[in-house]
Length: 89
Image 1 (cartoon, rainbow, N blue to C red):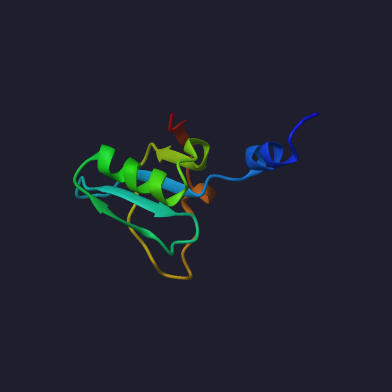
Image 2 (cartoon, rainbow, N blue to C red):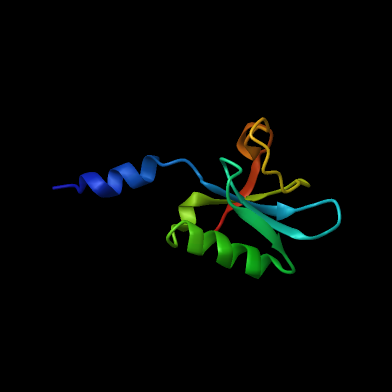
């Protein structure tokens, strides 16, 4: 019998995005623009995103374009304007 819980997890959209800003700093930010931060390395940004998502690698997307940390309510989530380069492993 297939676990209902695992099938629901597979349907969850990515909740964190990791990328670089125009100054070369690494950014991790959730899709709702409520949690995030600036980091000195990709490893640090990925660790933050993994910690925030409960270590669900499928919930993290690396961006292939520049992005900016933005906590404004009127901004759009990065998913609507980007194509993910790869999902974190």
